[in-house]
Image (tube, rainbow, N blue to C red; front, side, top):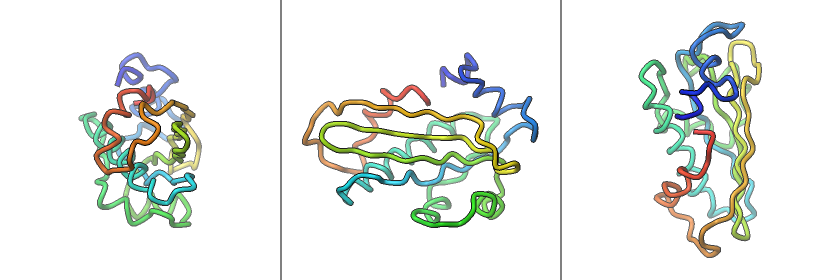
Length: 150
């Protein structure tokens, strides 16, 4: 949220105007792709996706598509413009997550679906507080505060 308030990385400008395609009034956060070797980490990826949706939903000028609606695109291979058209959104947040050996790597990008143009992207790496932390749907909440792109 601080990034939006201070317009760091031009995020506020991309969301609320000055873009070639116009302001972004609606977006969908697609399920983060789990790149971890352990398929059980999908719960962690889903939890981070849900937290991103919840954080962006706090922006009153932005219509954010629900988790239930975007989960149908998990693991799919549809073109981004087709997904955006089906969900009736201006932009999409997509990304990957990898969690292994006490480390988490998250990559996220904001893409203007009208032009298929990448507007913003960040890669983040953090050490896990606990190496053996189990993958649970409720696990991401403490993590989210440490990732600065929200």
